[in-house]
Image 1 (spheres, each protein chain N blue to C red):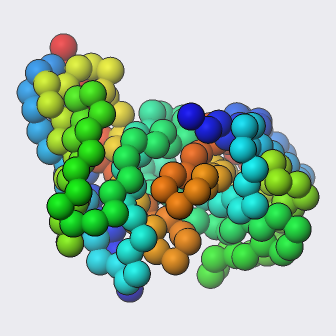
Image 2 (image 1 turned 180 degrees about the vertical axis):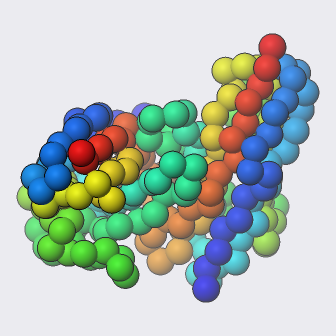
Length: 114
Length: 108
């Protein structure tokens, strides 16, 4: 099946620094990718929709200037958490739909801000 | 407001003890109901997509069914390797909305 690769799987950063997370579709082109955040024992919450060649669409309550999304090619989307704070610590997951029937997820990135 | 509710929150089964998980939903413009399996510290793994009431899909010991208001994931004769959190999600207008998941533990 289709593979979505997310990197890094774990990252620890100091408060105030920025962290970039990459999401790649390895064997198919993805004009759209989704970014989710998942807190412990909670559901995945959609943060934003990444669109190749255009601006990302953010969900209500998600700060555009804090969570920068770039979708520069048909196989790569990046999420940059800027000026990270401890409350940004979470599990971030990307997803890429393949056709109308399936959506594949990356392995997730555990971000810890200290 | 669109809602996806999964029950139970947690389920502990003996190996071989069949059971069902429930996903009830209220959503406008349903474009599919998805089931995923998620292991700790990993991204969700796709299992099934269902589109219309009455539809059923099977994969090994798992069987998913769909009605107009809910979906069931039946686990038949589970094994310890079936232990995971099972998530359902509904697709509406291009986005996936997830339930909180059911954590399943299967003991030998």
